[in-house]
Length: 215
Ligand SMILES: Cc1cc2nc3c(=O)[nH]c(=O)nc-3n(C[C@H](O)[C@H](O)[C@H](O)COP(=O)(O)O)c2cc1C
Image (cartoon, rainbow, N blue to C red):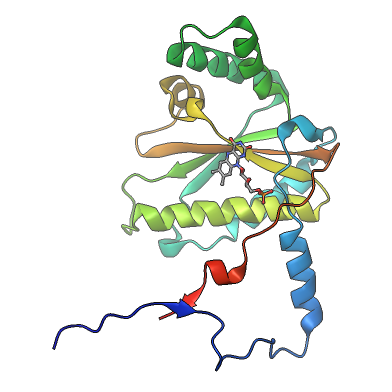
């Protein structure tokens, strides 16, 4: 007999309870409120003050508690201090001109200006080269994402806004050189943190039934 073909079915099904069995719904509600109220706040709307050193330590400790198969720590973070922002601005500008030699002065200035926005700006680096034990890079990316999400949620819990930014400059040789990326390392995105100057309306999150089913 050939293998049965199973088609995923919508969840929750009729036989599954739809209410929580826990006697302590408070913790669940608090966690839900905190997680679902996090928003991506554009760096343009992130002002000083940003987190201080001890708050940043707390943010990085939250990254260190991310799930990590094989304990290979497939992430690292590089903070771009204020006095080094001009170097990043130059990379943004030159990477744009590399891609589009016809870029206008205004476009180049906008690219440059992106390096100067949030009070705290750091590069998220994924380490996807050979590692021991040999954890698949897909699993390591999950770990990196979990570390980043922990950091976003920690910053949110501290009362700060945060965002992730990326773009075509991420993969440029200039970016790799500036941050000294080794073979197997990838610049994933920037993580920005600061005080929210203006909040946007909460986006509508996808409905659970649109992405959960049962086999
Ligand atoms: C790896 C990564 C890179 C991202 N880069 C950008 C970006 O360059 N610009 C941007 O506006 N948002 C960026 N985002 C944020 C998403 O746009 C944002 O999370 C999404 O719109 C959902 O909004 P929310 O985080 O407020 O729920 C990025 C998110 C991820 C995971």
